[in-house]
Image: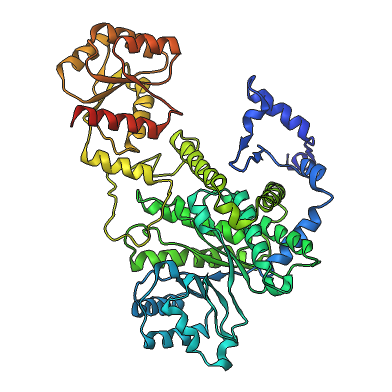
Length: 567
């Protein structure tokens, strides 16, 4: 038997055969049904094969990988967890403790400044000669800058990292500190897609380059700062695409091989939620690993409770996200671990093509400053943010614990938020949760038929409403439409949803509306034909609740109902 098994061969399946089988399984639906489109207008195929990849990329794949790997330079990355303290003593304490427990850098955010004393700055100066410093959005009047005067000229070459901000001018001798940044975190938080982020990076670099004698001198002084969200493979491809675009930009300025540009990354706060905050930890792990696999040089992980009040435990957990990645995956021993994946390499190439074209369009419109201050850019960013919200609201995208699998027992902590971030995707849901917590509706599910038949729609309705903070107070079940109508007449409630199986909904609702006077707000779970919906609504049914419905729009209607009723 084993001998026969060893002799078994399997026929080779090519792309055409695979597509044929896939189309058969779709039962008449087009093959394109399996293709999804990203906000960057990139088609995500259901399968990426060597055969298909080589047809399109064989002539440039090796060169692409070589450029990316040279740009990454080192397979290791720097763990750069920041302190969120607002005074110098606490900042120093946090930084020292973090370094003792695995952190590898000092991170300072000038947008959330720290109050310093001279003695504290001297101690910070000593730390900075031993560990790299990454400081962003530093203002010229920030006392933090005084630290650079507290370091002896002979020790200034020991200081490395990046210090960027507004009209800052470091003393001489800090040649290993980068001072020019393409900081895309704010654009990312506002809603920018990956193509826009990459194009803006090149546009910023081009404007800054005018102040340097050579591309090499500029590259040695330049750092890019990206936020990484939960779109795992696309974010990985974003960092790899930057390496290729950087080389292309260098060639445009006459450099055959671009000096390495440093990529600083942090977990995306636009994906964080105040709802079910421990899910933020899962998002952070996803985002950090994506950054590492994409070839980031420096990574910061925000604690899962950073939108409320962080704790020493949450800071430790955030730091350990990176330590676990290093100690358990050994990925820091591999240069470009994502390279060679047909899927990721395909995404990388497409991002390069689109981002370069977008960059050229920005240049035609007057360059970076002219573009980002234009109405066209602000409208584009607003449109992208709205598209993301629509994807969430119609359940074409998920924010676990927020628009799906919401926990009604969860309490939003708003007392002393550590960071305030505008345009977070979860914010509209948080607002509804707060509203309905104070203005709770008395909601019932009117279930018809057997439990196994109505339960799927009943569960869907409860989950749908829970995302807005609306709790179901009762779930009576009935065998006939007359029983349900009688119960609805005799009992008090604000809002009800009729739940039955797809096959039986029409029968039960037809019977229900014949016996119910229509003086209460009642919806039907499920989507039906327009003519049927029109008939039911004419007899008192208010509306519908169904998969793919705009969730936020429905919550707004229910909020309007509450306000109209004066509750």
